[in-house]
Image 1 (cartoon, protein in one colour):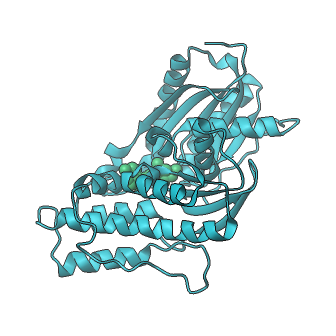
Image 2 (image 1 turned 90 degrees about the vertical axis):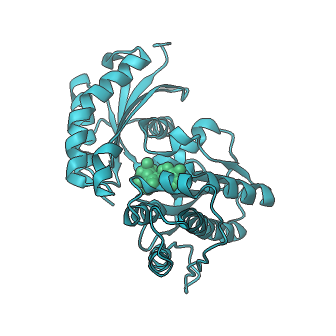
Amino acid sequence: MCPRLSCLLAIETSCDETSAAVVRDDLSILSNVVLSQDEIHAPYGGVVPELASRQHLRAIVPVVRESLAAAGLPLEAMDYFAVTQGPGLIGSLLVGLCFAKGLAYYHRKPVLGIDHVQAHIESAFLERPDLEFPMLALVVSGGHTSLFVLRKKLAYRLLGKTRDDAAGECLDKIAKFLELGYPGGPVIQKLGAAGDTARFAFGLPRMSDRSFDFSFSGLKTAALRIIRSEKISKDGPHLADFLASFENAVVRSLLKNLGRAAEVVEPKSLILCGGVARNKRLRAEFERLAAGKGFGFAIPSPKLCTDNAAMVGALAWTIVKSRKRIPSTLDLDAYPR
Ligand code: KG4
Ligand code: ZN
């Protein structure tokens, strides 16, 4: 450990993971502790906001303590505090935000409010700082499905977003309907791994206005129709084929938009990030698309795809380095969207 380099403590509580990380200004991650609430929400098949904020309240002190202990540094060694400000569940966000503001006030250090979606994008730079601009970044998670173009660091322009469900939300809802467990994405990946992707046909959504927006409600309705007409069930014979076909449709839908956008923007590189970027089929097809068109590309390693505080700390350092002065604001407020 080298305490002479600057360090910050980052906190993430936007949804159902309580996470704290110590990140150094050379972007080395000294600790990145993530406490998942999956077991708490699993019986409901989705995140229950009130249960999530109560669990963050219980977990925040031990998670921060463990993160500092793993980094081998005391709170006094932190030069900044960084915290997810939004978007996310408002009660959950407020737990992290109030905690970080309290630490900043007591230790007389600046606190930075960080955007969760931008932090997901930043996670790609942690392992691939060499990526070339301009780039397209596809953020796919349980709460967000958005496509950004970046002409340089911190210059985010939204090209398209989902008009209804997020991709992860769509996977979670179908898994819930089939009583497969929560979160749905990993279960669908596992149970559909050996399935035939061509067994069930799914039409892909097309935006009449040719925008780069996404839509997953049509795929969800089509999935429910097939479940009923083909009598797909948890223990039925066609489950693996159905899940493989459905997961493949979600992947194709995401990449179709990305491919179209790439033709217009002509980026040098592509980023895939967010919790759904853990998906093996999506990772493989994304890689194929990028390599086929000769783009540089980055997909964070799986532990950096799902919500974690290291990505929040990484973006905080990028912001700190881009500014002459960081004002010590304690009037940060959380934003749900
Ligand atoms: O980024 P994240 O941790 O939280 C949000 O910001 O929403 O993403 C959680 C989402 C869930 O919908 C979960 O089902 C999905 O990521 N997910 C996956 C996989 N692992 C997590 N989806 C598909 N395949 C996976 N292996
Ligand atoms: Zn997220």
